[in-house]
Amino acid sequence: MKTRYRWVVVAILFAFMLLHQADKLLIGPLTTPIIETFGITRAQMGAVFTGALVVGAILYPVWGYLYDRYARPRLLALASFIWGSTTWLSAVAPTYPLFVLTRASTGIDDSSYPGLYSLISDYFGPEVRGKIYGLLQLTMPTGYLLGMVLALTLRETVGWRGVFLITGALGILLSVVILFAVRERARGSSEPELAELEEIGVHRFNWETAVDLFRKPSLRLLFTQGFFGVFPWNVITYWFFHYLETERNYTPDAVLLTMSVAVVTLAAGYPLGGALGDALFKRTRRGRLIVSTVGVLLGALFLFITMNVPPDQQTRFLILLSVTAVFIPFASANVIATVYDVTLPEVRSSALAVQYFIESAGAALAPLLAGLIADQVSMEFAILVICLSAWVICALFFTGAAILLPSDIETLRRQLQRRADRLRSV
Image (cartoon, rainbow, N blue to C red; front, side):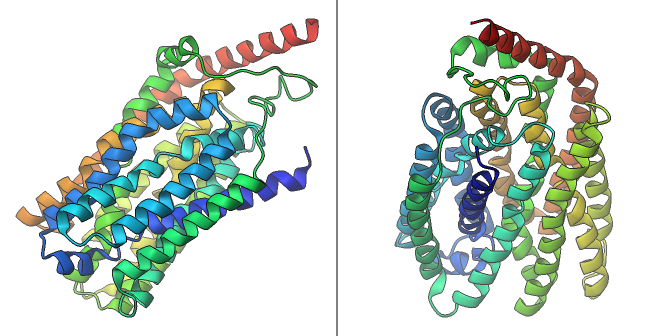
C-alpha cells in the first residue's frame, strides 16, 4: 500500500465527516428560526433532536453488521447518499409533524461511522490510531463551526430550508467521490502480527466472535459509560446556541464570536487528546483511559466555573468556555482506539456500533430532557445538571475499565499471534 494513498483516503473521509457533521449539527444554530416557523415550544424542538438520535441508535447494530460483512467504501457511499436525500426531505417539510418525521429520517446515516473507523484501522497501526481518529474527529467541532457560519450568513437570505438544501446536495456529491475513490483494505492488515504476511486470509463477521465482545470486562465498562458519555455533547450541541441567545442575551455577533473561539479550542482537544493517549499508551496500556478520565473531570470542573460567570462578563465567559472546550473531547478518540485495542478486526465495526448504539440510546434522551428541564427551570440549569453528572459517572467507568484493560489487550495480541502462526505454517 502506498503511504500517499492512505492519506488520500483520510482526506476524503475527513471531507465526508466535516460536511456530514455540518449538516447534522446545523440544526443547533437554526433552532430559533425553526421554532418560530412552526410555532413550537422548546420541548417540542427537543423531540425533533431526539427523533434523529433514536433512529440513529436503532440502526447502529445494523450498520455495524453490514460493515463487517460487506465492502465498507460502498456502504459509506450509500450513507452519504442517504444523508443528502433525507436532508432534502426535511428541508421541504411543510408542517411540524412532517418535519419531526423527516428530520428523524436523517438519523439513518448518522450511525454509519463505525465502518469508517474500522476501515481506517486497516490503513494505520495501533500505535498511531489515536492521532488519526483525533484528526478525523476535528470534523465534529469544525463541522459545527461551518454549520454555524452557514446558518448565520444564509438563514436571512435563503432561509433555514435553503441551508438544508445546500448541505443535502453536498452529501449526494460526496457519495459519488467515495464510491469511485476509496478502496477496501483487508481486515487486520495493519496489525503488527499480520502486517508482514503476504496473505492474511479473509475474516468476516461471525456471531460467535461478536458475542465474545460482551465477555471482555473492560469493554463492558466502556459500553456502559457510553450510555452517559454523549449526554453532554448532545445537550451542548443542540442547546448552547439557543442558551446564549435567550438566557445570556447575546447578539448574533457575540454568539458567533463566542462559539467560534470555543469551537476552535474544542477542535484542538480532539487531536491533542488522541496524541496524549497514544503517547501514554506507549508507556502503559492504561494510558488512553487515563487521559480520558482526566479530560472528563477537568471538563466538568471548568464548565461549572464557566456557567457561573455573570452574563455581563462576556470576555471572562469566553476565556473560561474556551478552556473548558479543550478538555471536553479528550476521551473521544481514545475510546475508539481502546475498543479496537481489544477487538478482532472482523468485528470492529460491530464493536464500535455497539458502543455508539449504547451512547445514542442514552444521548437520544438528552436534548428532550434538557428542553423539559429548561421549560421548568432554565436552560443553564439543564446544561449544568446533565453535563456534570454524566462526566462524573464516565470518570468512574473509565477508571474501572483502565484497571481491567491490560488483560484484555494481551488476550487480543495472543489471538492475532496464533492467527499469524497458522498462516505461516500453511
